Amino acid sequence: MTVPVAIPRYPDEVTAAWLNGVLDTEAGTRVEDVQVKAIGTGQTGATYRVNVDYAANPTGLPGTFVIKLPATDDTVRDRVVLGYRSECAFYESVVDRVTVPTPTCFHCEISDDAAEYALLLTDQSPAEQGDQINGCSLEQARSAAVAIAGLHGPTWAQQEWLTFQGLAMSLLDDASKKGLGDVAVLSADITIEKLGDKLSAEDQATFREAMGLVTPWLQNDFGRFSLIHGDYRLDNLLFHPDDGRIWVVDWQTLGVGLPARDLAYFVATSLEPQVRAEAERDLVAAYHRALLDTGVVDYDLETCWQDYRYGMLQVLLISALGFAFAVGTDRGDDMVATMLRRGCAAVRDLGTIAQIRVEAGP
Image 1 (cartoon, rainbow, N blue to C red):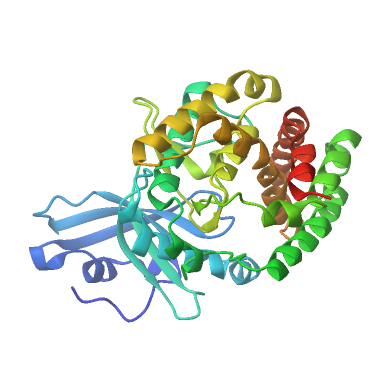
Image 2 (image 1 turned 90 degrees about the horizontal axis):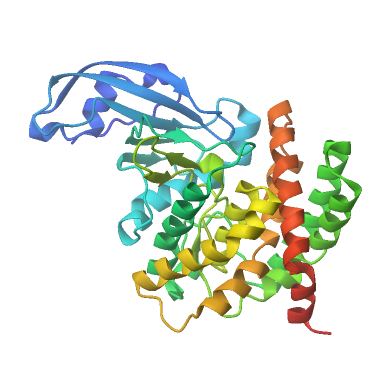
């Protein structure tokens, strides 16, 4: 195929000519016309649905695609260029080696400075994005717990991922872990100030105490690591309304760490505290079985449960980092307040702070 020189920057640049340059036209495919319409929230990028009219389509390519382009707001784009690089790296180098369900990628292109990129994916409609504020059903939570094992298991304890160039954040040395710990404390202060009385005094105290432990938390992964999504929550999942299938999207926070951090983050942010407390043992067990099915060995259920408890700090850390330095919106404020309220309750219920202090030692 002939790939165009220019990466489309705006939706009107996603033309029939551009698609003919990136799709399998050697097989005789020819796009005649396209219609592009904005979808999604656009928080870290601009997402569009592309309806395609073919003059010829011998291989049966889809009639609609989803394309992700950089954010139209330059301040947002500058903040998330590492995320663009991370997402492209996932689709170029990781997706074929894992079993986590994701949309099929038809084209991925990124500039040298990572400021411009285009990611052409299958349109999973009628699947719908999860609702972070409303939460999800236990059936959906179980599906999500099983799905993320498809990322963790195939990359479990493989040294190559520690230095993978596509990581959004690499924390291999103590200095970088301390640096993130310092930023976490600052982020908590900013987040509490921005949210005001949306967070109770009890949650504010839990939040501040937990963020003061980020450095020792990061320093102890018990020798267990894999690739992690990093922001594994409902807004980054698509659910089919009829058959229960799900797809994981938005791979802009790809990292390496204690695998159960993803699971803890999802469960705590997706379920109200009472529901979470009643269901989390079963959800951890479902995740653990799925891990073993991928070939993970020497990892018992009780250890998985303790990792889940320990990983709960992920909820507060990612919520703070993503919110403190972003431009606020009414829905964004409510969403983060909901995530932090649920997460702080989980940290308290599970004794995560005491667990971290014990593991950190004197």
